[in-house]
Length: 614
Image 1 (cartoon, helix red, strand yellow):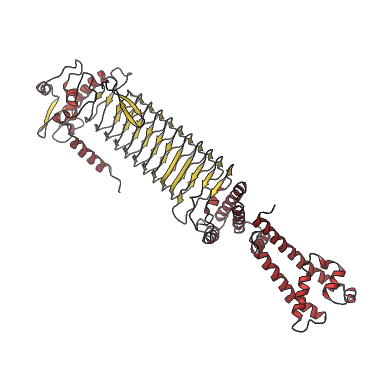
Image 2 (tube, rainbow, N blue to C red; image 1 turned 90 degrees about the vertical axis):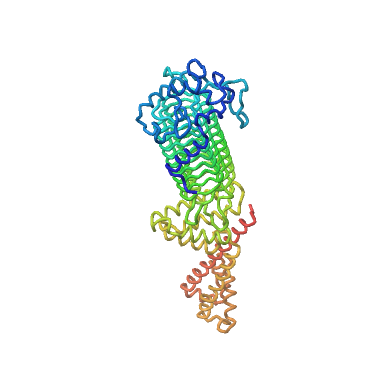
């Protein structure tokens, strides 16, 4: 569904406002729960009474005073007169705004705290059946350049502005709002500033529409702060705001930048199914209780750098379409991440003290979590079992470069047959992550480091199979780096080919068989024929050579003269008169003996690792 434009949102709001009917007759059907300060039952009663004496006035008296005005075939109170032509409210510079401002000032001055609402308990609003509502009832009013302040400049303002239209900038800087401040379903056509305002009771902004910039910088909310389903079409600033009670932004929409840097949430913070179309900044925020971003959608960069989550943090089914940054964030309690990361995810040097459940997926094969948790510290169990799908091939390993795990790491790594191919081809050789050279080597070094961290974590968890698997992946990543010495790469290549880095049982055995065959056919058979040893010139000579090669498997047996003579079958005098022959035989046989010993050792190493022999 396409996001509404400012014009579309404003047009829809006014349709709803006319449907709600705030004409003079319509006000008679809008009840004041518990009664007003002077016993008013409806909003019509409220505007009928004299604000000072509380005495009711007739329609004729209100018309004579200019408070009742006929418009479009119906009568409207001055405060609720629509701003369409030919109404004077269509002109924001009209002199009549001064009369409305004076009228509002009188009513705000005599308003008292509502005794009706006691607050939310168990998710329900509890009412005092004997309490009255003494707030200034500006519900449905259409306000222009009117300044709402306490009459003495220092006291509290108690008012209800449900479905109120603020046609110009709303200036509430430093205002102290009493309990029951209600701006639900209100619309702010201009900028709305609540800079350093104070709400001593519940603050209701449910379904409010901020069509331009909204500022709640350093605002103090003492009780519930409700912004559910609110719409912010301009920038929204809550930097340094203090939420002492529950803060709820469920299903709210932020079309532009949303800034909560340095805010303090002492109670629970709810951002369930909230839409952030621009950048969302929660840097240095303190979440002291439960924080929920379940189903939230972040289209731009989402930054939680250095944020502190003291309570349960949930990001289930959240979607991060831009970069997601949680660098140096602290999670003191369990945290859940699921959903999708479409761009870069960063938890560099984050501290996760409680259990972690991370099943968020990467959105496309060309993306990965490289360095995502670089230097992060996990004090609790880290469950990443759902983060990588089958066949993705060790993709998460690169995320944990230089990370530390004090307890178990649970990881479903996709290292099946398909996954191993993906790891080798996509992660090791794919150059789409950057140009050949330094950048690619940095990525491979990150992958190598991550595999080493996971290997150690698997060792702590006694998951020997994955411990060895990630050891092999670590060495494979290192082999692909162009900044590694050639001799190290050569030795590593032989180690991998001959034994799959110490994990294969059949490769050393196969290598040993090939070694015997090669030395027999290529070296011993021609050499023994040259020495004119009997029984080697016919077809059976190959078996004599194979026998000779098998004898040489005995480690270092041929480094002694008796063993040398016995194994070749040649006359001893041949060795005595020709030292070059002796030297040659020692070199060849010694080389085979060394290679054989290495292969036998690799076979024993694989047996030890496969069957976990101490």
